[in-house]
Every structure is written in structure tokens, then in C-alpha cells.
Amino acid sequence: MKLRMHFLAACAAAACLAFVPAHAADDDDDKEKRQPTAAQTAQQAKMKTCNAEAGKKGLKGDERRAFMSACLKG
Image (cartoon, rainbow, N blue to C red):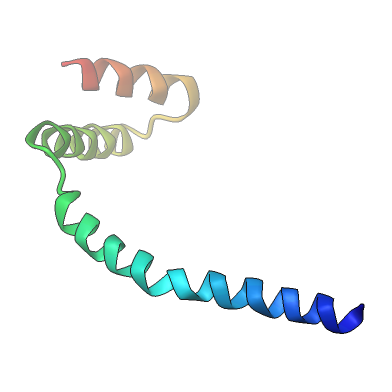
């Protein structure tokens, strides 16, 4: 019985490892496709600018949240 359990565990581990290289190759292809859109890049730049302004003003807590919300809306 113990031998059968060890055999099944080894087979399961081998089956899992057999699919790892194929899956890893797919991830490399997906990274090339996952470039940020123009809208995402613009939003990131806006977020960086608003964050810097909030830091210069020394805002914290609710004041910072309100400022960031207004700044990001335009």
C-alpha cells in the first residue's frame, strides 16, 4: 500500500513538472503583449504629478485623499 502511494505521488509530481516549461514560455510572450495603453501611461503621469503636489503641500489623511481625488479628476 505504501509503495502504491509513493508511486502515485511521484507520478503526480512528474505530471506537474511536465507542464511547467510550456507554461513558462507562454508567460514570456504575454509580457510583450502587456504594454500599457496611452490612457494608462497618461493616468500614471497624472498620478505622479498629483502625488508630488500633495507631498509638497504636506497633506495627510482625508485632506490628501480629497486633494488627490480632485487633482486626478482634472
